[in-house]
Length: 293
Image (cartoon, rainbow, N blue to C red):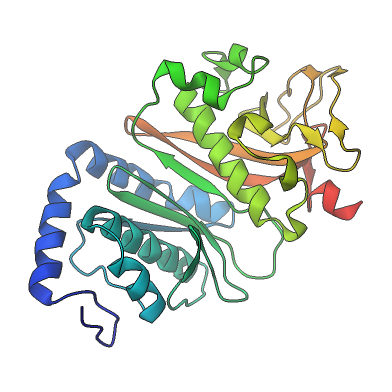
């Protein structure tokens, strides 16, 4: 392995062969999804989010420094290209909100950003996507891309029995698929773990420890355990209005705080991102209510 000024792994011939092999894996469906994601850029910008995209077939992917180079060198070729694409997508998302970012090392599997910089990233089918916000805000940050549908028998790993009725129910202009619910929970998981103080995350061990319910044209997702009281949330009867003015679920067994997540179709898959914090009634809150208690 040689590390040049940009931290490139291997010689140019090896990198070129890897890029060509990876490009073959970016299918027509994935290319269509990439184009669909690009069309979401204005919508995300209106929500204060910068979007970064990359694919594993890009010939210019390279580590941005020694920490990335060291991590990439220990990975098999396919995983290495995904890792580098994710890092590049994160840098592009940050540049979209006016922030430069060098290398992004990792702690375990989690990216570590320099102070004042943060992004959420996801990979699927050779595509890497990231979202970032300008420094100084406290809005949640999370996204997830799923271009391969989940099999039906995975529902037991994603949903609690009280959430199974969500499958196929009306959600604004569409319906909630298992893949969409999985993606939304992945987004909420990331946003809650990135929250200042990481309020309530001690109760989160699997996606079933999060509860999702419709709230207008989005989902309200948060821990099943009330982190302030140390006990399960109890149902409350009575409809409340979500941020869009559309009703949230009438009978609520939801968390004391959570994240509003939007799920959008992207080709044959879905892309989800965090819209904002939400209290127990589904209304927007500036920061997680558990953090303010």
